[in-house]
Image 1 (tube, protein in one colour):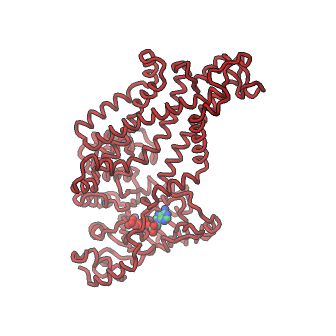
Image 2 (cartoon, rainbow, N blue to C red):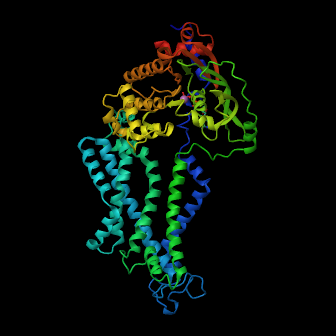
Image 3 (cartoon, rainbow, N blue to C red):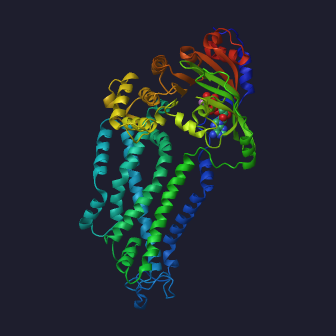
Length: 596
Ligand SMILES: Nc1ncnc2c1ncn2[C@@H]1O[C@H](COP(=O)(O)OP(=O)(O)OP(=O)(O)O)[C@@H](O)[C@H]1O
Ligand code: NI
């Protein structure tokens, strides 16, 4: 079908653009753990929390050297003295005349040991269980999940208190039990990730290459679950501190071992004699809990960041933002959405802005499927994200407008918020990573729909069940109660399409909606999109690099290259008579089997 046969030209052109294929997309932004560490160090709260935690560790290790007195040293003249009251004890004495400051320092040890126990027990059980269940599935998974559910159903605190009568006042044992009690959180997380990773091709590839099951599990899956486990650890530690102090406060700790909760309890019982006495232990417990929570938050931001904290010359960027060209009046009144001279870029790290989209014009009418094609890194996704108001925070809009319903969505955040979900919907590339592994399909669809269109739960459910049946899901009622890892990729994409059409939008922006799917499923999903367009008169922007997809369902096409649209055509004329040399190159390289 292609009119030009210039393989050499195609190859030459490829050689001349060595980085083009390697340009990172918006999700896989190519910034690895180094970047995460750098972001962590740029976050003042994270640095504060880390410094505090480091201090606690140092205190715990060197308590015998730092503490002014032994934890059991008694000076009755100091009993119930207030902090900083000028007595021998810096933070005053407890009701037995012991030094509160020294006791808090000594207690740091036990606290750290307890933290390590909770963390190790919950992580080891959760990760090993999740790995085995997710990898071997079948009976292993049934049993493991049953155990996890049973554990989660247990009332934790009550169990720990009841255990006191059996095991006696042993905080380490209690914390090990607490570790078991919270292990299911890690288990579920890991199992969900494993289920996903397992089905990916590289696992099969690794198997074929002769690696043993265990090595496959360790190599690939552990890499994938590292970040979420790390993030969860901060919260696990915070919960551990709280539970431990709580148990000690209730008097379930060993009275001969100094503990934060114990000091707090002593201070509480003497609160009428020495009201300030509760402050120090309460502050220590709260600060430590806070530090771990902040650490968890900071890790989450750093590991999942969209890159907010790269060094940027604020003035230059502000200048670029201010220079945004105001949109001209819409020359095409019957357009559903019109992108006008859109230009955007990213800070280049040297104070300037690197342009990634440059003067893009795009018009979509009701009932039209508009393809946006071009090689990797040409700016297709960025254009789509701009239409959805989903650009990363550091993106700089250099000019242009997205006109929808008479409003410029780029300049009017309120209009964007109102339009998104109800008038404009999004179908992403990777269905699995766009579903929350921790909640059921039905719940996430309901949440999304009711956020976009407030309605009673039952009405939302009925509506969604109808739509699920419409998109070709055989047993909507059953799928409603499943978790994302329990369904296939094709089904997940149908679920996301359901979510997109649930709010009854006029425009759907789909970024490579079939790339992550099997070939056979791809055709079904495309057919579904086409039917929905016909049924509802939807306009669609379909980002793809696959000209086969374009030929299959698009009405018109824009070809992008290096951030600009080089050609815009009706789909038939594009294939019959491509005008731009780049389009011809694209056609000949994808349609000619010998050159593919
Ligand atoms: N957060 C970001 N920070 C800096 N540059 C970015 C960011 N996101 C995207 N870019 C750059 O924008 C350019 C266009 O990216 P875009 O994702 O739109 O390409 P694409 O045409 O969709 O490619 P693909 O087919 O690979 O998805 C790329 O050069 C990319 O490196
Ligand atoms: Ni893309």
